[in-house]
Length: 635
View: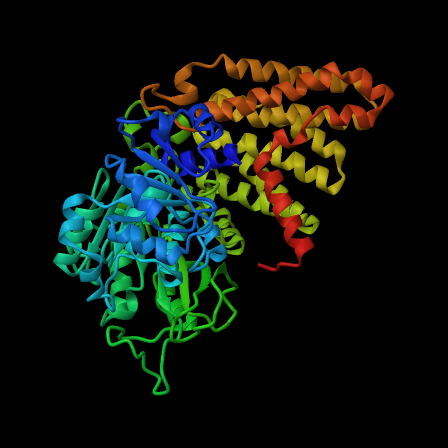
């Protein structure tokens, strides 16, 4: 357990100076923390030392008093990691809250919500010391007076508090690296702090109508890249047009007199590739049809919410949530799941994820495009691989359509968007090249044999349209298309066609774009070689595997700037993708070394090569779809 325990601690609060206190003060956890880069001590060896983190292990100990006694000896610590399986969670939390602690903003991940309950602690629990001045000014008792409108849910325990916190944990999964995030109606600021703690956004602004509320948030949670301000979230005066990458707005629209005007304000300040994550109560109403909460001005169901959001945005995902203890579904279990949009199940809260329409970008917005993640590298030295503004007719399409992990998560809407671009974009533009690639992989993932000829036709038309004046990103897509066409030909059983396309991909020059594109040329050589082995042509296979090794080594010799850009602010994916090129080359080398096995035992030869290395993302997608089919899950 010590290995997993240490890993969980460092992944949640980072490496630092830590002291282990408690019932099982053995050396195992301290050793594992040290191996994770921490300065770690047992309490008995740490008299007089100061620490950032106290790890309090009260497993098997039920009284609450040991918690405070243990913490009193480490007043410098601002983080508490608590393991006390026998302590009642509600009672333990009240002790900690009264002593100036709150739940840690990184303490609750989305997948953990349904497994929690109000009386039992989780295996590992995380707390943060409240700034002394803020704790003295705002007590929990004072906050409870306005709980009907505002509450700091990191200073409250139980299922209802968990439900509020975990919504922000879910929203954090939609924050992209470098994003500027606006939390509309942030209340006392805990949710904005959760977003900042759990995501790689660059800047977080929490805004609330009440100046005193914003003041509390700033005093309690403000810090580097995280600030709070007073403002009307239904107007967003002072927030510039097209300046926000993600808007989060939890339990807001039901409070706003003109909620549709607020949605329009969201659209005004959002970038053309931005997103909104919002939540509303689901049909909270009494026998009169009105919401009994005096602060709620509207009753929502999914149709009403979706219609209002759909006037400005692409509906991407729907989630439903419930928690026990509410007036509507008091016995409901904890639930937070993505749900089919057409379903009308009765739940307690609805969450929507929507995307701005990148086609709505005007010429001024396109001219002003800066990719948030690479803004620091922007300028004359911007590496080709991330110079979207210099190549794409509409660079806002990149994160919405192409970037894995950031693009639309609804496969059908992604497909329709890609089809629209493939049919309407300039014939040789990178925009169209990326769209064709998305369509092709959708056909490949779905094993849609009938659609293969259509995609091949699009690929051929893109090739015939020319090289867009030697544009690097068009060259990228031409290589990617040739490799994709080879995979599609394999799918149909046309091995001769597959070999021809793989050969084309392998012979195209990745240097026109980036050494990172050698993933496609090396993989093309490998797959062509495998098909030659299937046909019994060992000599042709050997030549392909040798070509894959050469290409990988050549890519490894590329100038540093072509791989990571400026070494002082490197592209975060550069070395990782170069490692994938080398890994693919190593699979080609393994195939060469093991060719004698192919003659004696083809199955043994096949086991020496990890074909997942030639497309881990596609392999993971295939596995996910297969698991869904086996489970009978349709969404």
